[in-house]
Length: 102
Image 1 (tube, rainbow, N blue to C red):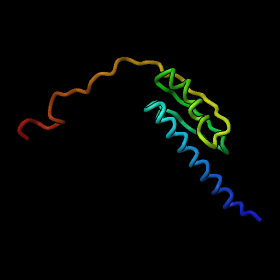
Image 2 (cartoon, helix red, strand yellow):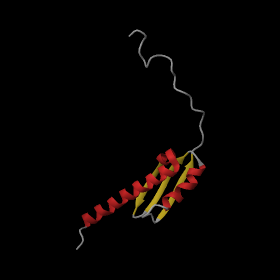
Image 3 (cartoon, helix red, strand yellow):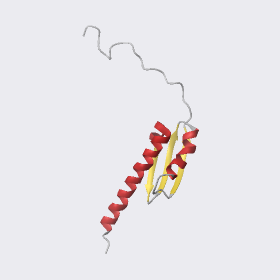
Image 4 (cartoon, rainbow, N blue to C red):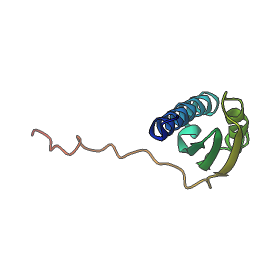
C-alpha cells in the first residue's frame, strides 16, 4: 500500500526540480528577463506569468520551457512591460552622507 504522505512529498519534490530546470533554461536563453517571470509547476504543467522587457523574450519563453524534459504543457501569460521614462544615474555629489572632514 502506498503512503499518501510519501506520495505527496515525492510529487512536491518533482515539481521543485522541474521548476528549477525551467528557471535555469529560461535564464540561459533569456537572461535577466527570466527573473521577471513567475513560474508555477503542477504535475508537469508549467505556467509562466509576468512582465518582460522584450517581445522576443515573451515569444521565446514558452518554446524554451516546452523543451525542458518532464514538461507536459506550457501556458503563458507574459506581457511586454511598457517602457517608462529614461533611467537616470544616481546622484553622486557628496561622500555617501558623510560630511567633509568627518
